[in-house]
Image (cartoon, rainbow, N blue to C red; front, top):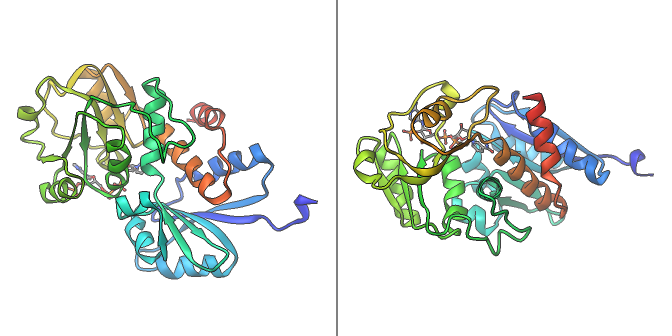
Length: 289
Ligand SMILES: NC(=O)c1ccc[n+]([C@@H]2O[C@H](COP(=O)([O-])OP(=O)(O)OC[C@H]3O[C@@H](n4cnc5c(N)ncnc54)[C@H](OP(=O)(O)O)[C@@H]3O)[C@@H](O)[C@H]2O)c1
């Protein structure tokens, strides 16, 4: 009699978090498997994250998604870290294990790689974390931004064996820190024009500039023919970056809604060992968008 049982409790914690689509996404995943889950969006004030996690855990919570600005704290409070969390030094997913330990994972990079693979016609297999397919082999990638999200995606992007990966950020020191960690190139927006050469095949906006409705100071000539411009942000209408990319020669454009659904599916798998079908969930969200 499954519906008489208590639902398994999950939540997303962030600040702010009221806009989150994660509850709707996870409820749709659960209904695919007839799983009885409860998934909440919990707004947590900065400085109160650890206490909120401990409270949720003590009240029988099974797992959490973690969003801005708590991904580094989530990594630090965990007892155990998956290789992808270690690579990022940040966590967007926590699992409360039966032995009482908290395990941290980062599904952002796998989610992005899966969505990019779909867009580029090279879908990743279910064991993509172990054996990624070379969707970007030989491609030149530019990543804009050096915050928590970019930290999470660099490892999985590099596993795809690109020809080069460059990070550009407003605060150059943060780009340099990531470049040092991941052995890639860092630059400021001012020096991008000199570095773009034949143009980048894939340009990923991992900044939160679009969130504030702001444009980035990008030079013309950034894109190679057929380049994909990808904004990790998603919104009801085209973001400033997507608008700029359409006017400046990107062959293909996409927002980050697919990444959101794919990273959620990886979290679901981490918690419950089941891979949801993401296509109908993404289609549903696009209809409501
Ligand atoms: N689709 C998904 O599933 C998904 C998942 C994760 C994140 N995201 C999105 O990714 C974006 C970044 O998130 P995050 O967690 O990395 O945030 P974060 O840690 O706060 O980092 C923000 C980054 O954006 C840069 N930035 C902010 N405002 C800027 C501006 N006006 N001009 C130029 N650069 C600016 C910052 O540069 P400085 O270092 O100079 O401050 C920093 O590199 C957000 O839009 C978020 O919604 C999407």
